[in-house]
Picture 1 (cartoon, rainbow, N blue to C red):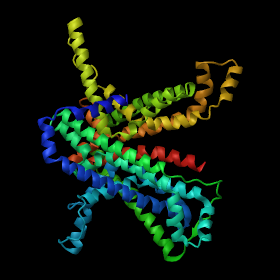
Picture 2 (picture 1 turned 120 degrees about the vertical axis):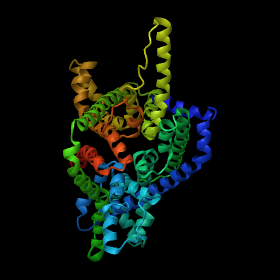
Picture 3 (picture 1 turned 135 degrees about the vertical axis):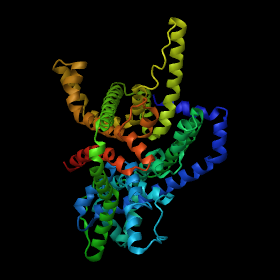
Picture 4 (picture 1 turned 90 degrees about the vertical axis):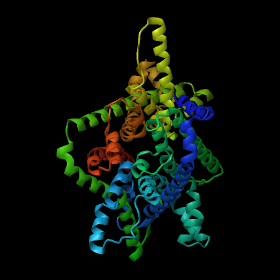
Length: 519
């Protein structure tokens, strides 16, 4: 399932260039490369800077509100980046309430006000959406270093600032690199945010080549370039991490937070408050204001259909993906040979592939299969079957499963580690075997991991935009599709109601995660 779309997309590199592809090369390809490069660099650098600084302050320093900010700074993960994007445009654009109020107070000449519809605006929005990936991993690294590392730095004559840059930061580099890599992969895969800003990258170009220029071949060739970029980033990151060797000889004692007083404490508290305000509180408040204004008009039968389609797709995708992940984990446990482990590893790389790439890579072979089945039915039975798989939920569910299999595999595989050989031997001693062991012994132990995996996949599918937009059956609109349609027309208020629903859905796994980490 993973290799077929990857192979399909990569093979398009060897297809002769058509007129559409030649037009793209001559007019837009260079701009796509430049835009994608600066967007990736800006988001990676900004997410690392913001995430690491907040992680250090909340893990090592004591300041007003530290315990609150330690978990609250993860809340922006609940908001899809494209939701933050259209809220930012609605607030800070030329005709938005912020600039309108400033022109009323300060006069019409606001030459100093930054243009939100710019490369910098896209980067800032994505940094606010993706910095929690770096924050979560970096904070864990700083917490696990313990006070022994800080004592070593002081014994070497370093002050706190020098100890951070010369000892704590280098020791946390693998975690920081991992979080930055996640933010970078999300940036390369993003479609909704750049579409809202009308900032052309490979994902928007793939969509336009397919649905505006009606050239699936050109879309596949663009997707092949994007997948080459993604794999190049993965290889560079793996090479970078393979040279790192950081370890502690034994478990460090938990560090006592460094108390900060005076203006420094309040400055850091203000920095954390400002980040939380712009990344979570402001978007949620503005969405609430817009939603209240349109709820009487928009909360109708059509909206309920959007909601029902989203819930149904998410439930089916979660069920399918978790079932396949459970079978994979069970197979790897029963047959722990190198071939099985390699197959499992390959099967879980789909999360690294952008949704637009998967949509193209899965649609092409399914279209070929549909054509072949139709031809065989005509030759053998003289029956016109039409499209059997294309334009159905099957295509969407296959794409969802391919992309989010890694999300469900990780928690189920972690839960499977608790099923030891002695548990199986005890079950056999009690007369259980085969399906009875799975049903009465393994599943109760795996239940927590399965529910976690299902919740993560459910929320990810609800928020997924490019796969849904490109592979959905005709008329099968979801909440994310509704947001895309309304934001494309600049109707921010009409996009608020489905966006609030997605934010509430995104809060569920975060609440579960926080409860797990506190227990």
